[in-house]
Image: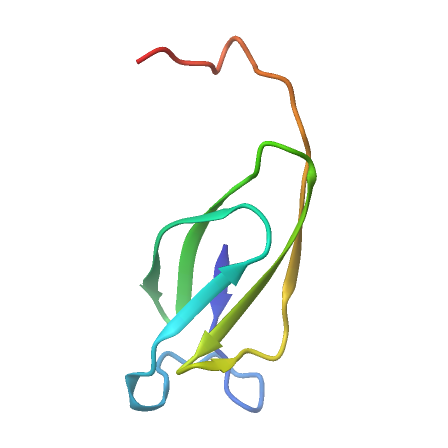
Length: 88
């Protein structure tokens, strides 16, 4: 998942006011690890699909205030793939 900071005019910005925390949330699947500041106002985090098909809504906040737009992710169900299944 990629979150891009933008100012009130839609321009890419690289910082938040007072270094406010940026966070992501999801209603489906699981966000893995932590949100990483990739530079240039871009933040990334991995989203793991649930075991059943469905959808999830991604939301975020900056300094505790919700970001205006959201994103919907659709998850498909699939059968195990013998070529990708691993034993550890």
